[in-house]
Length: 168
Image (cartoon, rainbow, N blue to C red; front, side):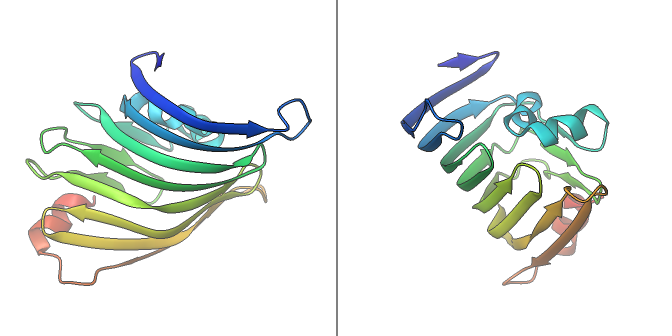
């Protein structure tokens, strides 16, 4: 299907769809416009509107995800790709992440989103050319003030040029 400029394929099921808390298990394949990506999670859309979070890219992102959950909690396993000439830029409250010129960017991992509490990242990997970074942590927003806890590791040395170009 299509939603605005995003093209997607969704396959799966919804159980108890007539109840107050339906649950689902789906697989999403998408070519998504970066400015539409944040609409997937309402809390992120709010932060996007307040200028705390933005995603910009010259081209669409390729996204695949397996999503299992309900209206309150979702477990997501994902893979995203940006071509080398997309110039992806992600601005967060903590840092700005830039895709270096002519470097493909691949992001994969898993996360849990609890609608009224936050996001938990598990086993998330960023591959950028020869550089590899792993992250895990949480972004909590249920207690009034947002808190971000993030650990970033690399199994191999990351060239200074790549690291400096990646994070502002």
